[in-house]
Amino acid sequence: MLATRNRLRTSADFSTTVRSGVRNGRRNVVLYTAAIAAGEPSRIGFIVSKSVGNAVVRNLVKRRLREAGAASLREHGTGLAIVVRALPASASASWDQLREDYDAALESTLNRLAGRPQRAAAKGSAGTTQKGTPRA
Image (tube, rainbow, N blue to C red):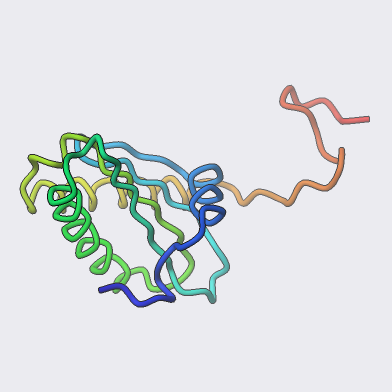
C-alpha cells in the first residue's frame, strides 16, 4: 500500500504530470514522469481504464503496478511525479512482464528528464515564439 503522501490524488495533479512530463510507452504501460520540487516526496498515480478488462482484472493490474511503483519510490524517494497508464495488453501480462515494462519505461523517462532543460515559468507574453523570434 502506498502512503497518502506518495499518491497522486487530484485530476489537476494527473493533468499536470501528463502534460508537462516526459512520456515513454511500452507494450503494457505508458509512463509519464515530471520533476517536482526536490524536497517533496515522489508521488505516483495509476490510470487503468475499462478497456483493460472487468473490475477483477483491472484491480489485479493495479495491484501489480502499485507494487512496482512502491519499489521505484524506495529508490527515487523525492522529486518525481509519475503517472502510469495501463494498456489493454496488461490484462494478459505476467507480473514479470509488467515489472520489466514499468522499470524500462521509468528508466527511459528518467534519462530523458535528466537531459531536459528546466522550463522557466511563462509570464505573460515574455520570451520567444516557437520559431525563436522575440515576442512583442
